[in-house]
Image (cartoon, rainbow, N blue to C red; front, side):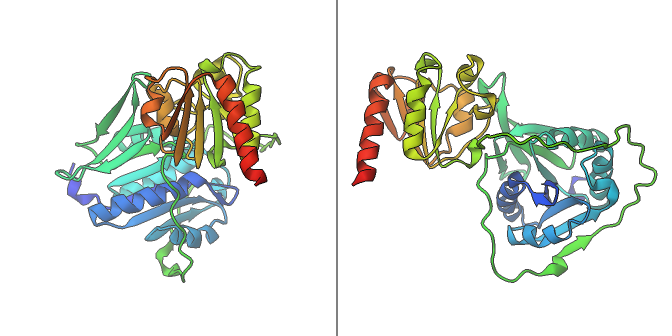
Length: 337
């Protein structure tokens, strides 16, 4: 394979019902930096039906150019249709790097595309860098159950592919200046010979009263050290005083103290709140992978040698049952004044 033929960084811009997903905008921010290091363009690739209007938004969020494919076959996500579209574009245009979100769609599409293109895929990445000596993409992800971080390189094949966990990177800043719509290119494709084994019948939505912890600015998170589900009530009181929400470690979720949707860590969600309060959490590498990019970390733990203390901006050693109520009272007092 002649690797020199491959050029450019692509971001698969995932959209659902005409709405760009946040992870796509996060990848545009990271992809822009990678493209600048390599001296190549950043391209957003978009699939769907009647999605042309999203091209302008993708340019505003940092894409140098947008390639989109519109077709009724792409109106709802289909493994075969989306795989055909991305593989066909890749074989024609030869990008060096393809990034996509590690969402349930990205985790389905990425492996199928990499297999057809006979290249590698590093899944659930938490960091991406360009190796200075070789210009290869260094893809970092948790390995061995999250007990260490592995950096993987695809040296012999192209494109280099990675899925990235939502929330790992900061969303790109939006450009409010005029946009050059000539940078948006529509590509026509024939899906008439598509042999899709799955047929879309109906989309059923269920409304749930849930909070997306990746969007919350203040999180009070509990671990095994909280002791019981009843003890999470004081965490909830502190979260209410902050105007935030309660989350938990894997241990807290497995114990039934916190719903799975609010799990922080390698097997949960990656969060970047303004304040993250870790209560009774030791700070395993699996948990740190999901919260260490928080702006300000407060750790409350009886063990002053706990790993969480090494990443905390403020460490409070003691019984959380005494510390948290005092924190709440001081916070309410400060608000009152």
